[in-house]
Length: 93
Image (cartoon, rainbow, N blue to C red; front, side, top):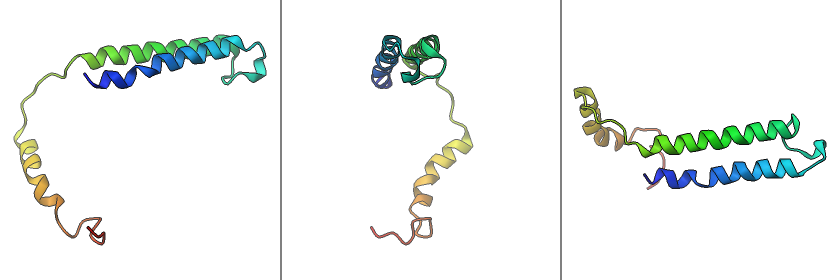
């Protein structure tokens, strides 16, 4: 649920992009090629995808059983991550 908080600024960002591109009459000053209609289309797609991602983030993932190999990997990971011959063997603590 806390993931939704990070999505909140993005619809505002896309709406500001649409307003910025729509107010400029000079076609060379626009950020996006294709003029005002392309800016409207890109901004609307950005808002729609962000709102869709916010809705999808509201639903928790389905619970599933942990397989035997996954349980073995999760329990063995702390023992193998503390080995001294890993990629950071020369780093000082």
